[in-house]
Image (cartoon, rainbow, N blue to C red):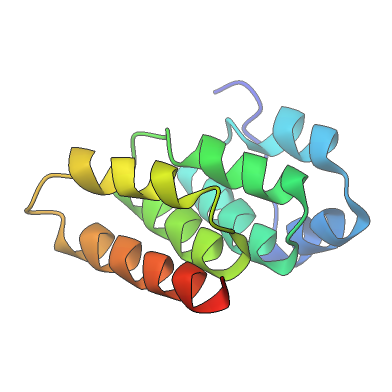
Length: 115
């Protein structure tokens, strides 16, 4: 897979803290599932728009674990602007994906609490 470079969560977190958004997008956004989950978790360390943009892009990935990680991180760093996107994901999520539905609910609650 193009861009399939596995990176540790610590390495990704350091890149997030330094604001290397373009490099993160180019090298890791279309990577393997493990790296995408690590990227989503690392993005929880920054409330920067770059972090939120990466997380919203990860919501489009066709993997439940990646979506759960992205939604969970958006719950940590997202603001009221991302609630509509998260609610839209909730509507599109099948009822049998209970873990994702729970992560969506929790993320929305966290964002509302901070608002």
